[in-house]
Amino acid sequence: MAVSLRELRGRIKSVQATKKITRAMELIAASRIIKAQQRAQAAAPYARELTRAVSAVATYSNVDHPLTTEPESSERAAVLIVTSDRGLAGAYSSSVIKEGERLREKLRGEGKEVDLYAAGRKGVGYYTFRQRPLVESWTGFSDSPTYDAAREIADALIAAFISDGEQTSVDEVHVVYTRFKSMLVQEPTAVRLLPLEVVEGEARPEAADVLPLYEFEPSAADVLDALLPRYVQSRIYFCLLQASASELAARQRAMKSATDNAEELIKKYTQTANQARQAGITQEISEIVGGVNALADANAGSE
Amino acid sequence: MAETSLQVELVAADRVVWSGEAKIVVARTVEGDVGILANHAPMLAVLVQGTVQVTTTENESWVAVVDSGFLSVAGNRVSILSEHAQLASEIDLQEAKSDLERATSAGDDDGDAADAVGLAQAKIRAVERAS
Image (tube, rainbow over all chains, first blue to last red; front, side):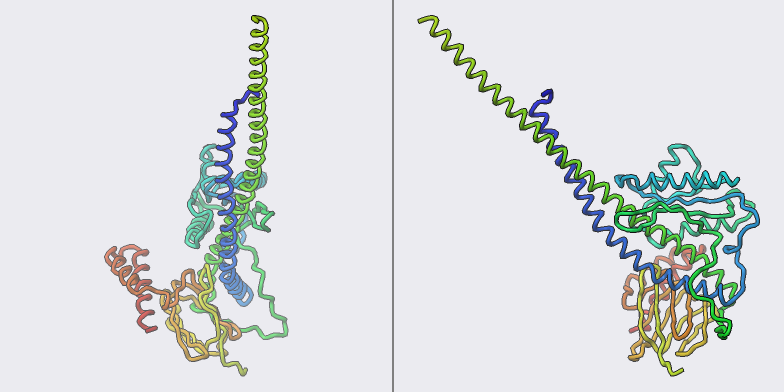
């Protein structure tokens, strides 16, 4: 054995310390997932009521809004990539970035220029390291996103979408985030956020039914004007919440396998250390026995 | 139409603040205060920063502060949506007052400070009305 016993003991200790850390991170991530899921559930009523209101306006009035109209020709697209702020979550951030790159290539293939927006320090780091320009980036909220953060992002994207002829104006907006399917499955997903698709939800009333006459205050157009940006905000908030739950699940899984690996390493090192110790003892015994024999031989010769 | 109560939900972006049966809902829209009783016609209105007052079927009433949001009424269901909504009982009066002072002293030249003043005033009003 090339490695000394002392060295092995040192390694075991350091792996044990690492194991404690990864185990703690695993437990923290596990407890936070539950919180993240609760947050997602708590946000659901708002999104539901908002969807209901938007579909009510869409169904009972015929107002066009810049956020819902398809531009005649689409030349620029914005892509928002939602990544995590911190690492140690396995392939979480890199798989979202990969999905983003795929979307970018696809949009490029359709002859569109792509503006990148990033949320989360990992995404920002990825692009600044490669010296690719980011139009705007947001960091610091990936594991517990607030509504205000979502609003900030939504406002920037809406402004880019609405504005015309400026450098940052775009014709469509996509979001790439990780959908939380279950504790085991999280899927990087790309969705088109703007222009808004026709809203599903409230079923169109039968032709025989009398349309309930909605009163709009101040007017249908104004209500839509105020509703749609909120709808976009709530969609982005939903994406952020899903991403945060996915991040935590990915981290829990990564830390679990790290803990398992550490356990295996400790086992291996312990075995090698035991072997080395046993070898040392055997050697010592044979040395003593050898020494005694040599002494006995020498004594026998002299007498 | 024998219904005499409204199903009310006050929803903030991240939680349901209150939900239950009510008789009267009073809220402030961009066009002025509006009171809603059972069997109101369907309506969608834009709310401004201010208070919402609700009288429940047990004749209790509560007040909440909302920042800009929406009120939608359809088929005896009232939903009040606001990014940040708070019941008067959850508001710390001292904190609201100090917020108001800070916001006032920050000047009202930009929109954010004016919003903050409005919100703090609405909070104080809500607490006063509730007590």
